[in-house]
Length: 144
View 1 (tube, one colour):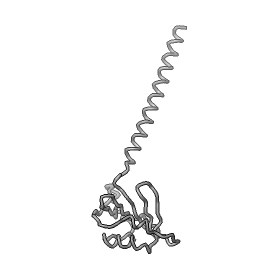
View 2 (tube, one colour):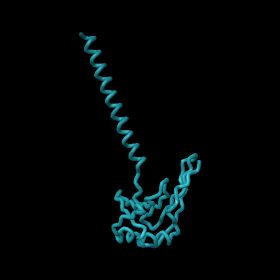
View 3 (cartoon, helix red, strand yellow):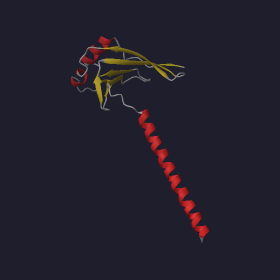
View 4 (spheres, one colour):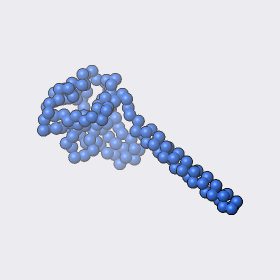
């Protein structure tokens, strides 16, 4: 009987250690996922063309009146090429003056994950792209 109780205590202890280990592994994976999905609190909008049959270039707009144009991806080094600059434009006009249309050419995603469908005729978007000299009609260039 004494051996039986000892074996049961060992078995219970091993099961508790297994449960604890699985819990710690699960916690680590959740923590790691949160670290990998850090949100840039400075990001205001991401803009891309909606009707291209390729990986699109992306224009990220930040709250501090800077932008980042992602135009190239190097598969070997796993790095994106970016053009950075500043602007002086009332960027919210693009969203606030958008009219409903069936001719959707751009997708604008804000920092909260809301996506706005923007028509090509949106003069505010066209003025902004012209001001910073960016063309979103291109595909992302992939370097092998």
